[in-house]
Length: 185
Image (cartoon, rainbow, N blue to C red; front, side, top):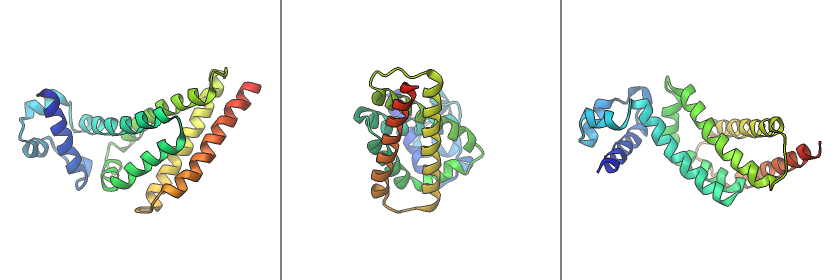
């Protein structure tokens, strides 16, 4: 019952974030829509921002879990682009809030996990110095976040599939070559 209640609160939030900026979503509004008490809300979440992070974490984990099992950029980027396309208003309402810096940091943490896993998959047991590994992962994290931000701001509603296919080949080939170069030094 407790997990069901938590999911119901998360679904109410997901509906509200589609039309309401994060800073204007209230516990009062969530509990009224869900039909739960304030105590029930606070049993599951510290505040609205903790709820937002949990919803975001769950969505990003779904993307990364699926992509990490396939071990390629194209799956990861396609799933990410699909989520951005399907949730454009929600994402804008998250990032146009007073908590946008924290939300961005949280998304970077999740992306870091995905990149570390993909790095290990592509390194195929090669020994890479930790400083080189960190530099490569940081570079690709910035490439992905920068590209995603630009696409999000400039290509609303556009089908990202053709661009993702090209970008994934570039990123995967570049990451693989960066690993090979780091091993040879």
